[in-house]
Amino acid sequence: GTPMGEISPVTRQQFDHIFESIYNGPGLDGKPWLSVLGNHDWGGRVFNNGWDQQIAYTWASNRWVMPAPYFSQHVEYPDQGFSVDLIFIDSNAMDAKDPAEDSEHNICSEKYNLGQGNNKQDATCARAGGPSDVWSCKDWFWSFWRRNQAFAEEKLRESTADWQIIVTHFPCGHEMGWYRHLYAAYGLDLLVTGHRHDQELWDPTHPRFAELGGLHCIVSGGGGGITSEATPVEDDDNWYGEAQYGFYDLVITKSDIQITSIDYKGDVIKQATVAPH
Image (tube, rainbow, N blue to C red; front, side, top):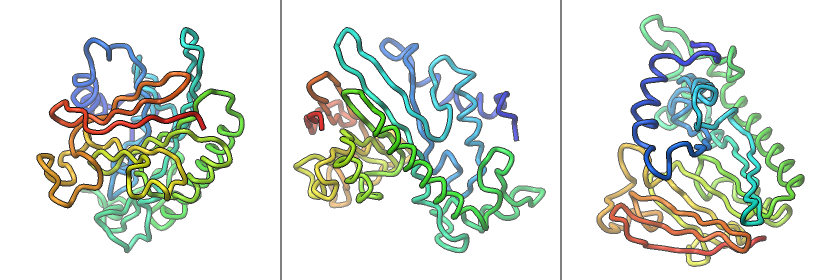
């Protein structure tokens, strides 16, 4: 693979076509773009798909920010009199299964990690600090998840910011007991997720809101992926949330966070207010 100090031509082309040329213009130019890896950034059905190049791009860009698979960012708004601690964690252990299990939805699939390419080499990310082989892959990801959990709890304990927000890939509903604990013990204010290709605002009107113990959560996958989870035109009883293609607008002040769900037509379809916890 390409060393971390370099950006490969393939990586450069991908960032030019699906990031730089799309997310630009007034209001976006020069703004930091804080990111976290998803299961398809690791490779989806493999674990060696150049995820380290996405990290390396942090030092090749003036706005892409992902210095590691997990990290935190303290943000001060001095003119508004408040601050935010953003904690980014890697939750892709949720898709790390035994090598023989569910080959189409398994980062550690033996079907796709063994005998790759024309030279039939087995996947390894040992040199980049990732899984060394498919047989240790599941244990590596779950051990890594525990490191992410410890990191998040440490950052929340230390936080003196007005707001604490966790950003991760896997959607509202994974590891709910742990997130309930973060809400109750450390005052986590908001969980921002993705993975499912739809929009889900887990607020008091959502049927599963109580399972998070009062913690607001959003699935912001409406703009991602080649396809949505279901037709975006109308709810055909296959929707998880309130929309398929679209995005969320968050307005943060010292007193609250206003969350607005906007669909593919530009219509506001749901709103919620988060109070400091």
